[in-house]
Length: 387
Image (cartoon, rainbow, N blue to C red):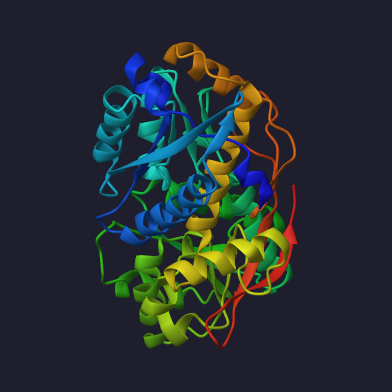
């Protein structure tokens, strides 16, 4: 973990000149502390706080030969697109941060990314996999793979390892993330198994809690498996209702299943199922295990994907600030320098994998992990799939 102690996320350089004397560096986090997925905000904040305390406890971060204490500002986006935009404006224009971590989910990250890019401020999302987040936005980055990679990974796993010839999909049509990955899955699964092999392609709207009509159609179509790329707060309801209605086949998930809250909501119904994600906590080694042990000891819960990706996203900005060198104090100039340093990052060794940017997009080249949920409810490593 030594690499996390050598760099800095800088936002304080947007302060008035007098604020530099305080030797404090401020960065912003645009996260859902309330709303439908508060666990995402909780895990993001916990990971950030642990990193901040570790760095500050060691005397601060050295940037250009000077030590700075970190100050993190957390703004609640309520898991709503309009709130994510307002949070971005508050952090960028009001708090004058150098960089912003989050939003995490794509529905919030996409509109907030437009604000960040228009204001030429580095934004990095740990958990937004929709391609639109970074598209034509040179100041916007992510620490995760994309849905146009994740969807085909899920489709290939369904066909080759679940031995599925016919698939069904159930997703929220009003969520960019869910809609996008469902389309990529369908396209690739039918490329492998032939046109029409996705025998049911059902939708619902966020906030729905009764999926019986859609699941009845799915069961009637007799698929070999069901793909449910939904957020953890919906998965428990969908899986339970599917089982209650008599669906006995495997139910495959996406990285939005990777929350510490999933098993509390889904329980035994999710045991034995698989999902595509970013890392597996059970059986982790090296720096990843060190992170997991430290997080678990501090917060009494195993860090989920969001926590791990927040740690990596913040760590990448820290490494980029070190690469860009001592800040000038000119906020616009420093934001541009940070963006250039981020874009040229190669081989960053994060706890969710090795990552590099190609200088053209803010999308890292990295591998996906297939996780199996054990009988103990643990997320165990099944296999790694790389581009």
